[in-house]
Amino acid sequence: MKALVIGGSLGGLFAANLLLDQGWEVDVYERVGDDLAARGAGIGTHTELLDVLARLGIRMDERLGVVIPDRICVDRTGRELYRCHWAHTMSAWANVYRPLKDRFPVARYHFGKSVTGLVQDRNRVTAFFDDGASAEGDLLIGADGLRSIVRAQLIPDVQPQYAGYVAWRSIVEESLLPAASREWLGEGYWFVLPKGEMFLSYQVPAKDLGRIGRDWNYVWYRPVTETQLADFCTDSRGKCHGTGIAPPLIRPDVTAYIKREARELLPPHLARLIDVSQPFFQSIFDIESPRLTVGRVALLGDAAFVARPHVGMGVTKGALDALCLSRSIQQSKTLDAALARYDRLRSEFGRRCVARARRLGSYIEARSRPDKGWTPEQLDQRPERVLHEVALALADIPELQIEV
Ligand SMILES: Cc1cc2nc3c(=O)[nH]c(=O)nc-3n(C[C@H](O)[C@H](O)[C@H](O)COP(=O)(O)OP(=O)(O)OC[C@H]3O[C@@H](n4cnc5c(N)ncnc54)[C@H](O)[C@@H]3O)c2cc1C
Image 1 (tube, rainbow, N blue to C red):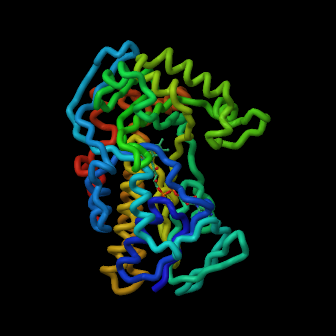
Image 2: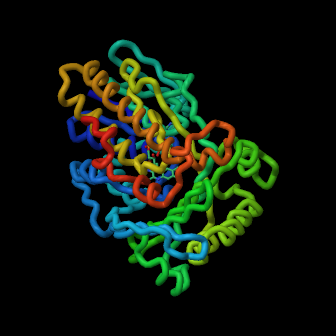
Image 3: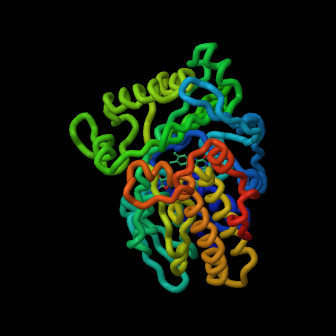
């Protein structure tokens, strides 16, 4: 059996490696022309993610993950407001991508191949690429992310819904920080909760695995109206790039603004992270697909569902989607039956995950959309609630206990 995987990021690589181990012939087609390792920032991990990696023979050791003992919420002066013990393994996107990519046959990973369309009949599916080439297989996996072309072809009505806020983020090499900041930051998982906002920061292993040391990852969720977003996404030449802009094109005055805001709203040692870095932002979206399979095509990862990052589950969800697909294929008598099982289980998980993430981010959304009629529960941003609910272990979320 032959699978075509569209998108060579984490979701695609999980699926490709798992199917390869089951004896499938697998080709991965990635739009970007070179190695993706340079992109991505920090990620939270879950035991279930580590289990899928272990299944592929990849161990999340000290090099790939950092265990963070405590979550601490501070006010803008740095005074501690709330603390809870919470051993959580943080990693970096590249640290999961690299071993997955290295494990997959080089000749079967095709860089610079952008899918533009597909056709299928009862048993076969053909993908077409922008260079005029095509490829045929028994199964096509659309792992092409938030703006999936595969999804757009199959279910054109599904569009990403802007959540009303963005995440400013970056990774800072620890050695760039003064000794006083390094000492103050220690090993904490820091939270600051200005009204209607959420800032968090934690250590991740050095992005460059050859370098000994750690980096600091930060994410700052801030309400941004549609009009402000259009301004943030406009480059120095006056061109608006829609709802997202490549980091190098962010205007210097926008970067200067966020650094000023950081000095105003965050404690000095956390504001310094933003000051010494090149912050970039990502708009936050929700995506819910009504179904994950159409004929011989399956959607997976962010192409299928995007939950706001507060559940810290994007990579884990992609890994579990891939595991469920490969398991369904293993357990079912026919590929049609396998795809039906996959659709049923992962649609349910995706819907619940999106709903939970929406609830965790509702107090931030409410600030840019105050007239939507929010309940007190949706506006609750008490530290004891936020610190306990953000990126909770999957095993501790009853509504997400769905078989894979
Ligand atoms: C602020 C923020 C914080 C986050 N924090 C976390 C976290 O703590 N933990 C966590 O688990 N997740 C986190 N995530 C989410 C996580 O990064 C993604 O959910 C996860 O990587 C899903 O991967 P994917 O492979 O499905 O999609 P993507 O990583 O988006 O990959 C899609 C791939 O498809 C390729 N592609 C697109 N179009 C085409 C085409 N036409 N032809 C061929 N290839 C194509 C793209 O180039 C890309 O490589 C966060 C996200 C954000 C925005």
